[in-house]
Amino acid sequence: MLSLSVNGESHSVDVPADMPLLWVLRDVIGLTGTKFGCGIAQCGACTVHLDGQPVRSCVLPVGSIGDKTITTIEAIGNTPSGQQIQQAWLDVDVVQCGYCQSGQIMSAAALLKRSPNPSDADIDAAMSGNICRCGTYVRIRAAIKQAATGKLDILQTIVTSPEGSAS
Amino acid sequence: MKRFLIFVVFVLILGSVAYFALNRTDSSDGTAPAIAGAPATADVLARGEYLAKAADCTACHTVPGSGKPFAGGVAFRLPFGTIYSSNITADAQTGIGSWSDDDFVRAVREGVRKDGKRLYPAFPYISYTQLSRSDVLAIKAYLFSLPKISQPDQPNALGFPFNQRWAMGFWNAAFFKSQRFVADASKSPQWNSGAYLAGALGHCAECHTPRNVGFGLEHGNELAGEVLQGWRAYNITSDTAHGIGAWSDGEIASYLSTGHADGRGSASGPMGEAVDNSLQYLMPEDTNALVTYLRSVPARAGKDPITIDAKAAPALASNDTAPGGDSADANSAGLKLFESACASCHQWNGQGQETPYASLLGTRGVNDTKGANVTQVILHGSRMRLGGHDVFMPAFGRAYSDTEVAALANYVIAHFGNKQGTVTPDAVAQSRKL
Figure 1 (tube, rainbow over the protein chains, first blue to last red):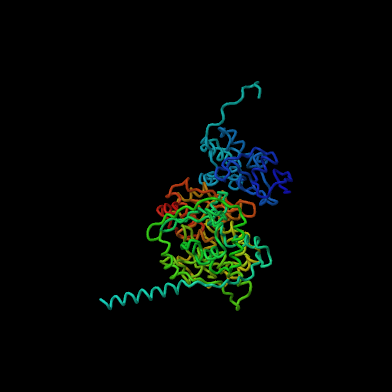
Figure 2: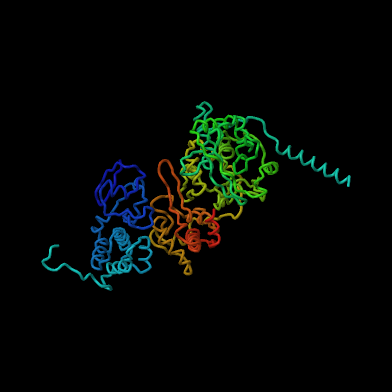
């Protein structure tokens, strides 16, 4: 029996120590916001935070986590940097198909937390381990900058629900 | 003319005498020192299983993932052609089921098959010759207790003259001495156990001792390091700069039993296999005996000695998530590749997250300017199964070109070893073929 701290809650899980964290999150605890992509730490879709550090949960054995705190996409909006990033993501409408975006947001939130005003090079270094097949990279970079500075340099979301429509 | 003929006959006689004198067989049974995992009182099959693991028979005689233990067929690509290992299951037709005890002992210790033909020294009879008869027969009993597998041996792909097995008699005369293990009474029992585990069973020298032009082991240069099948087997002498003399006992024991020692390195390639198949199963007493023995191996610098910079400036100037300290004209292609494919696990400061096996700082791989093992690991990845869990790194050989792999390897050497790497696209192309 292992005890994990996930999004501020303690979970006791009965799993083998070599099970990757991603399996525990999705199949045992039921937090399915974190996605499986490549399974070999090359695409970034499974990124979660371990004590605030972005890690690839698909290759992280759950037995090696100890008492470090885990934060997933479900709770990243409760942190200041996560909140800023998610708002910018909505304003810029970064997402296309969306599959990689949990991982993108987790990497971006970690970046913003450690460098509140990242340069292009900082963004490249932090985000190049996250792949997006739809090619939303331009909007990802713009959204990170917008989250950091508040300056609007790219077209903002223009489609909003008409008043009175079902939402 | 007559005088010349007499001279020729004289030379032939002298040559024959020398040939047979040098190919003399040690007829003694031999005595092994105490091995903790295979005590004389134990059941013969249990002893045989432990000894077969300690001798790592499976590394060469089982194709990984084939589900056919000891059925042979593993390819060894050597400079003079390809040799395939043989079926050593008890199958009578395709294996060694018809071999008597004496046949098996002769093959293991003298390198001669049941049919009288000579084995190639890819089979380490040079080392196994030291084994006691009782240990060899325990291994035979264990092999014969396993399921028989019918799988004919694959013919070797060797050109003339290397396909002439009889010629190995001359090689043996020059480089092989049939001799049982000789205990050194002046040393501790633990040292003697270690010497037997390293020399007779584990055959460390086969990879770690440099070879001469005749492909014989260079005596007087034991365990000073060599390159085999594109992988560098490091210097494991007690040399404090170039060997493992500066490692603590605990670090050596940890490396042997788990394939990793913090700040020293992680095993991969053939050494990863040795840990996976063999070394992780040794009892702690036997691992410690190996440590005792390795500590006593005379210090030697070896070929192309590696000097480790455990505090490589560029890595120290980086943090776990961002690079720093690379020189301005740093190889930007390598940096970009590291950024996208490697940094999320290895980190810019080389500490490694996800697993301690991913740490790079202070390892010999990143400090080897030729980048032999860095290139191999990038191309082929790494996989070890240890006590029920996998340690692995994906292979990038099919994802990146030779030029990209060379740039990445040189970046890794510059950033984590603080040295100018000399990996070329041509060298990468060569490594791919191995």
